[in-house]
Length: 198
Image 1 (cartoon, rainbow, N blue to C red):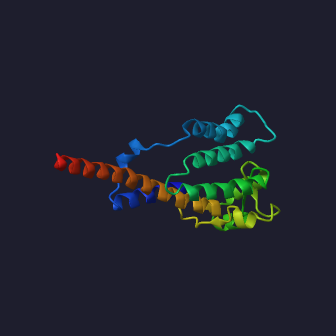
Image 2 (cartoon, helix red, strand yellow):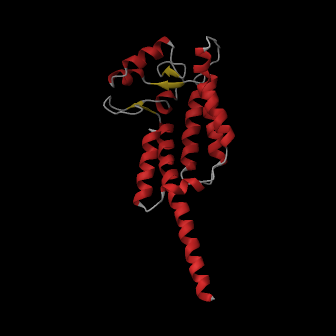
Image 3 (cartoon, rainbow, N blue to C red):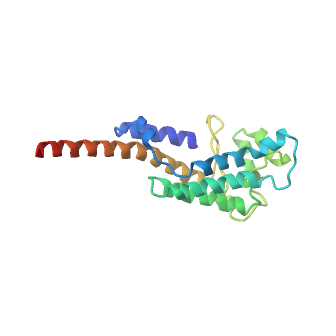
């Protein structure tokens, strides 16, 4: 869903006469925490390759989500970031209530043709997902319970938090494209006005 949100944001920005190269001037706080979040996210895979078992291995994806939420808060002033923060907060709360795992509706997953993933969740080989049945009572509302059709080429599992974050990404991308474009136009107008005074 996030990839589609970025693409949609780009399209809206172009339609509104935004500029892609404006991202070279984008100021985004939290570069080092983002790197730490990425390391935490891939740590379960690294431990698996090394053959190391860890009882609370689900803490790593959860920690990555918390760090990403922290970075979003650092950039609170940017367009769409409030939606991203609210969506991210919903996801980390429901994961925190389910032993750091995201609850998913296995029945809907199976109907959508994701039988292999359903089996992996039941066998426990997918560490960051848990069956919504038997999970916290808020899970059917805040977990990944919206499953898109099997023909959809991208991520088919969505939660309320995912939807809000995706909308925020759309606003963020097209907003940044427009913001820098507006600044450049504003600077040009100011320069022309001053030149006429002299």
